[in-house]
Length: 262
Ligand code: LIP
Image 1 (tube, rainbow, N blue to C red):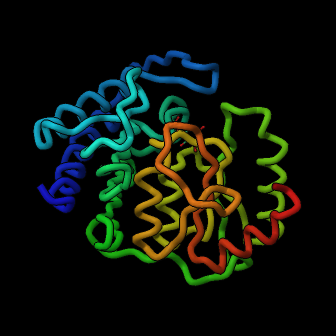
Image 2 (image 1 turned 90 degrees about the horizontal axis):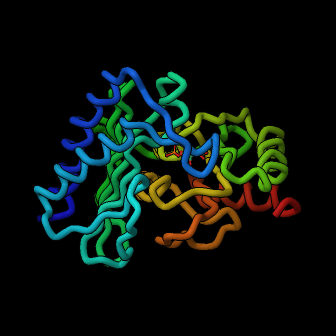
Image 3 (image 1 turned 180 degrees about the vertical axis):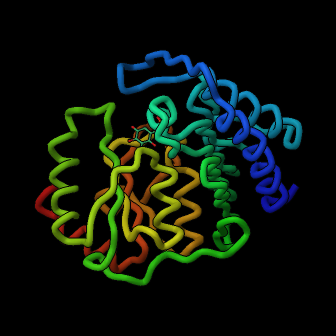
């Protein structure tokens, strides 16, 4: 199967899973690493549905998923990277702002991405070299400079030791942009950059499944995605900082304006 064909399967699987989220009731929350890091029966059900659908289409693929104990090798010939519900706290609290995220990688390089927001009926997707799309219409990042942009950020809630730095960066971005937003799902924040809604997004502690799909969508929309210090973003099992910008120019503005905070 080509990456395009696999991306089509990913989107179909996410549309099926979206129904589980839209019709969720009796949500039961379990703590993982702490009160802020939770999982529900719907995270597990969505993940299982996605794995079943994707495995049926790509039997030899491996999986690297948020709600899965064993971690497949990231350089597998075919690998799906899944966050079944990105924005789980939003889902648990009824904020109606979460997404289903799947990235497809070959030998350590993401080739296809799909991010579905069930609440708005928005499907973002990209295949490397083929552009980025929202509900089938091509999207491009904004052409504004940082001063004329809205900035999204994540609070890295599992890492309270990073709070001072996170909020110092957010304050600096508030001073240097039009406004800031903390919307609670990294993948949708990345898609907001890709769609030209936000000019920049940063977060200081993310897992691969929080950004693998959105990073490709940003790049295919004309943006850039790096570690928060501007260094290349690797496909890694380790937690990472992430900054996504509408352009190299906006990234340069971010790095210059935050140099004293790094
Ligand atoms: C969440 C991210 C969010 C981050 C949270 C959490 P989850 O993903 O999308 O941006 O701030 O700590 O990682 O856990 O809801 O899949």
